[in-house]
Image (cartoon, rainbow, N blue to C red; front, side):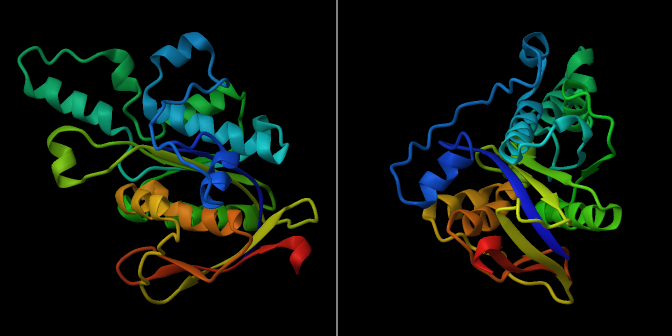
Length: 266
């Protein structure tokens, strides 16, 4: 599958958008401090109640659509997270293990895995199809494959959003995730001259090793956050090409991105 990358959104430690990511790759000074996003797409009242996982996913989704110059209300979406909202999971477990067992209704309804997709669809008036993917550490490549297949089969753009936040409490000892990170890609199988970048995506019949980003900050981020496994692809785009790149999908198969290339460089 040959897929055009029309827009990118990204948010992480010291990274506030695609321009900031490119500046980091280019070797410019980097402040690694974390700042929680406040996505303009969510009304202020709702934004105050929205958990970090939702705000992170909606922020990068909006960035990707803006970067692509595409109206957000008619874009199919694939949201992915390895563990969902781990802060709320920790809260639910602690509360149910305590004496009162009285759960906050707001936090409970935000605990579902497709909460970010719900907030996005409401805030952007989007009624297009949406999927929410969970595949543990392999969530990014699994969601990438899902989004590319959808775009190819349905001949429509698909917005891929991946995000993961810190796992607190006892669960974090079993499934540690470092600093929060989110990224979004506006993908389209209908490749045109308007697309700055393309990537050829194909499954492979064996499990490869994880790709390692060249920048040490990004390599550490990818090692500690499943959603940040996407940064090897983002780095290739920001660094003017590269490949092939490979990601494991499960215990026996992988996903190969054979080329990352600028259209005007073909």
